[in-house]
Length: 437
Image (cartoon, rainbow, N blue to C red):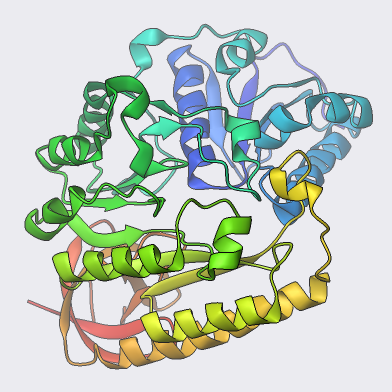
């Protein structure tokens, strides 16, 4: 058992969930360090006496991971290995009262909008002068840039508005300041993230301002790649397409979660778009931004999804051939609109549907990768794993997309640098190659 000393507290932040949570943890990290406190992020040294768990509450698996993590640190506290345990983030925001009753060993729970209260409890002041400054936890050469918080969409299955509130845009000036500071500290690539990036600006300026924001970011000196995530298809701001086609540092990459394609399911999911309009939009994006890599996310097993709906979705995946694709089985989330519907599709059936979609995508990815053999691609290198330098092309976002592997025995590149790579081989989801001058 560790003996309590009079030394100042040392904090360790544990982050679960999505990239939005990563940014929240980075802001907390910056605030604590700005207050002169000793703080780490996911340190393996086990020498911190205060743990802060930033939780995810999106779907069942994520909620369970968050609870398991909290309980792990409860055991650490009861064993005397840590002194204090605090919990923040989406799960804490959504289920605070339940968690207080069920896990009383936690010293305090905080919601997603309670950073000043969390800092006060930790003995720190909220420093407004640090707005726009952020200590990143990602590799130094890339960063996530949150352009807004919350969501106004009525999607039937989604609990995000319950945890993050209504849509609130940051100002263009504030976002550009943050990007400029990130570049000054070594960032070469930013991932623009939000719950719904295409809604950006309406609450602040009275109209969509995503194109103006992307133009301003593109003008930031030293920012080499700008990547757009989470573009909602309904009311998509098509004025960003010429920018993506013309500006070299705006990646020809778009993450657009379409969720489904059958009119029956789009209506039931309350997506505000039809099959026909979805196809028209996707084809327009491909025609106006030649060579664009399109990523999407699909949801299977939602209440009311028939076998006919699912077959229509499979045909859509086969026909359209997205460059990157992920699929989730439906999670029955309380207080969402879909919670009033019967969750009648068994978990095993949801998993089967997920696997069938990914099997189709695996074949598509293999075919697209085979077509790249012999091409020379610009690659940003993220890490060295085993005997390979591992990087990404313009078509790939960190953590979720394909990678390019270069044999470290016969090639050398610095992590965080760009290099031209001639593709010599492939697997289903990754590429292999050699660095060329």
